[in-house]
Amino acid sequence: MKTATWAVLLLLAAPGLRAEEPAMPKMTTYYFGMLLKAEKWTPEVTPESTALQALHIAHLTAMGKAGRLVIAGPLLDDGTIRGLVVYKAASIEEAKGWAEADPAVKAGRLKVEMHPWMVQRGILP
Image 1 (cartoon, rainbow, N blue to C red):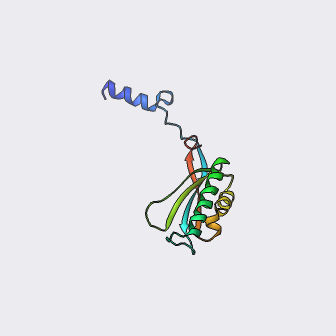
Image 2: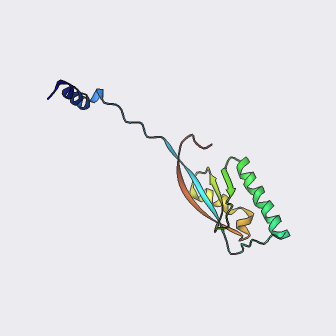
Image 3: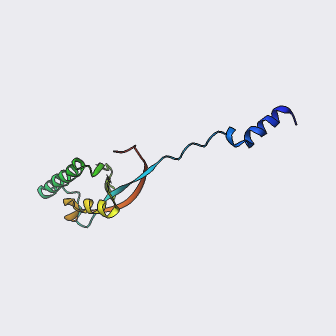
């Protein structure tokens, strides 16, 4: 073998001379929820649905101000999933409880499907 080939083999074999693998990022858990059409869903805009929407937005705003809700928003198509929420909670039960306290969920207009979601620490508040 040529001298250069031996030098490469020595570098690969020497533990202190190998390039270190990048460290895995530290992860944390958030709770990702989908707000879905429920039994009492209707696209019809009525004074009742308008009032319920205002209560829904007030609930989400309060959750955000309390530091519980990281991000939320509606989906703009007419699919089954009407919106998304991401909670910072101690458990999925806690996050689901917050989502189920939403007046639109309590009224049966929306229902929630919650999932634990791993995110790199520091990316979200």
